[in-house]
Length: 252
Image (cartoon, rainbow, N blue to C red; front, top):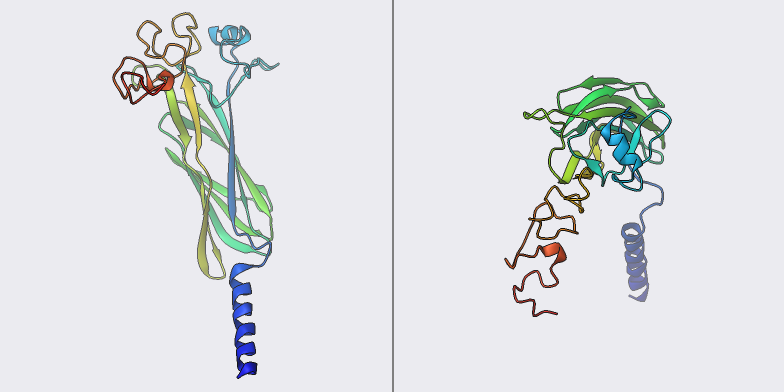
């Protein structure tokens, strides 16, 4: 009986070890994405002058090509903005994935103006849609990666202003999704979306917080709050209200 209990204990320990300690280095298919935005060739425009005056933000610098690099948190409204996206698809350690397809969807505010081929272990073909973009990555094995690119510009809205035409949080595109086949089964991996914030850098006197609401009617004139949310209705916006749910401000 004692020997049976010992054998049972050994078996349980073995099962626990199998469940609690999976093999190291068995990560599967992954997708990662980054984005950089800029204003192209605006040396002689108001945007460049504002940028060099420091009104767009500390990260705004005019380079030798007259481009203005932009932080994603500081995308100026009513401006032609160009964004370059880089998406990397990688196989895991010891993994072989075949017939990989990558899809990404760009927001209605952006027009895809260019895509290039696949850099990495294999060349692929790309197909361009109106909003979604699809690349055929083909096959990847054992930590091999392929890198894909897309360049976008802000679209004209019906009022013929370049989007973004209002301030606030924006989604530049959804997270990319890669699908493929491993050992006869379909697998997939997804990346994170790219988000940013549209601001108004062009009127620091009347809109010092750059939220597209003029200071004389802004319920938080020195704090960015384009939605003007005022939960307790006391005339002070939530982002600058010490007691956002108490109109009498007794919480202080």
